[in-house]
Image 1: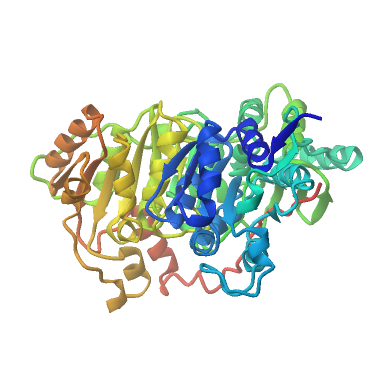
Image 2: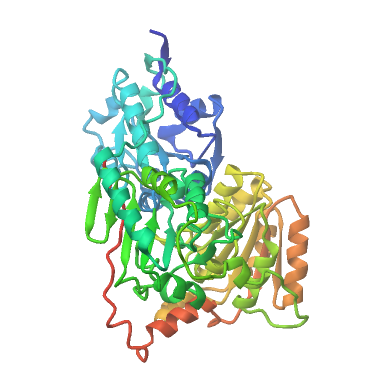
Length: 565
């Protein structure tokens, strides 16, 4: 049998799985392995800290299909954990590579730096936020452990952690053979047939059926099949915020993002008046329902997630979402399904914009200007807070055109995620929407964008603190130190920055950004501290005590898919 080394085997498998970049921070335990990683042809992308490396790899994986970070044991691995938890929550396939102490050191009674006193703590901790957490401490077993962990990462679309002791990096093991992709999900044929019969009987007799598309359609590569189903059905299609752009929002059947009370009235009326709601790959979470303001009770729901299908009160196990989408597309009547006339989101939202000279900027007008600015070559990354809420009404052109943590909602995600998106698809220009409070969480990663001369566009919404939190409950904890954000590119040594206060100034800055290609363009947009998006205002009105609906609304449980092979 041909010989290799533990590091070479692992790195070849990662390349076969599609990893081209690894984000991370060096540390003494991982340095030798990093040398091997670079020599193997995987580009190492140094970030300012491990948390940001995780965020960058997360966005990279959403576009590329898999991402990777490489960090040192203890302090590095623990620092990255919040990002990995977010990837686990939102089904993002990440490989976490941790360079660890030598196996001989682990048998000593001496305490080692970066540790918490127990060598197993890192593996045990990562076990809670990964689908596989392994240590390559036996060269003979290493190939099998690598293959099993990577198979789970790819099949279940969730992170794994692989720890490589420093003295195992160059230990011999057998060479990797051809990459065997994990078996696709296999539905139970009888359960699938019965489920499709029941689903079609509901859809065929429905008067107002609606499709709600979710993020799993993207994670499992089902957009083409979903598109075929949508066109065969002829009915309106909404998406969840996390699943935004599983279908182009210029499609004539796309009506936009449904998120309960945050939705525009036209979308809400169509979805909430449906007599049958076909939810494909959607997670029915609190944000998806606008903090429990969604009104989806009292109708038939067909809810398909990975490995499980629920129709009203009937649950079918071992039914894969891909087979459900394909099966329903094949069974659609030639004339499609019945539904009253409706208007698409591209008809409802005017994407043209004319700036009014001297008019003070508001978040509503800024988003309309962005709608007119973005195109098929744009990837929008929206930060947690009013940025992601406001971005729901952007009319996106293509799949994976929108990235945001719409379920886990970790503040500080967007700036490092922009780095990951830029590397995953250089043909599409990232445009990030970030609030000033969130920017301060991970501001260092602007340095990495400058270093790589990345031509991203950063729209920094400066509303003097945590405005989304102010809307929920005001207090001194919502205040932050004001920065001259537009001067930071000069401080970090790349790109350019500009502060704008009026619509014509924003117009000029955006056109300058469109024409610049060396380093990030940071446009600091000055807003009133209580200026919020229309969606956030709609939610506030919905949750108002005067409305009387919130107290009566029973929350619908979060649907996070279970993994059943």
